[in-house]
Length: 222
Image 1 (cartoon, rainbow, N blue to C red):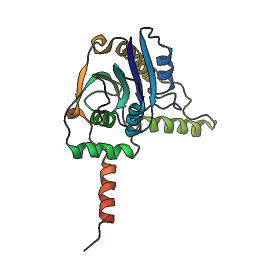
Image 2: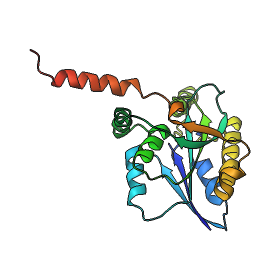
Image 3: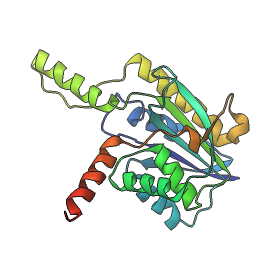
Image 4: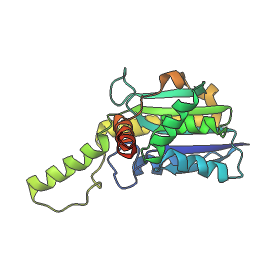
């Protein structure tokens, strides 16, 4: 029996129309893995806190499956890709930059992978199921609902609208792949793409700009 962690990185429980929301969680929780011990984790906070949570746990995982929305480029929006985290070497400053961005509260599967690798918490088998989505997906869903309310004059609960058919199909695809990944690991997946440090998204410019400004403000002028 394998012990497996299944984590939703960037899970939004209050927005039903979002692919990494309640619909996906409900479908994953309804799956049965009688041959494995599976723990489903809501990873809707910063990477440093997630890594610390793994460090504090006494559980040793045989494999970890992460589900995340990214804007990695090169694929059309809504494309779901299975990846194997292969790691790689980053210099100390590059790791520190990832940690700095992580403590600002930015949710990033890339930073999570790097920081977890640095602290040696990942098992040999690390699987990432990614859906290509614009960074502004969540905000757009909320704004669309607010715009609809203004048009109709009705009061509704933001985030409670049903999923669009396209997004529901994404959820179904992720669920099917997660079931395979948890049950059989990498060998059970139809097509797996390597994910190494060379494939990581760049850090958010706003963090670096703020850091530079803070350094300038704190440095005495001669």
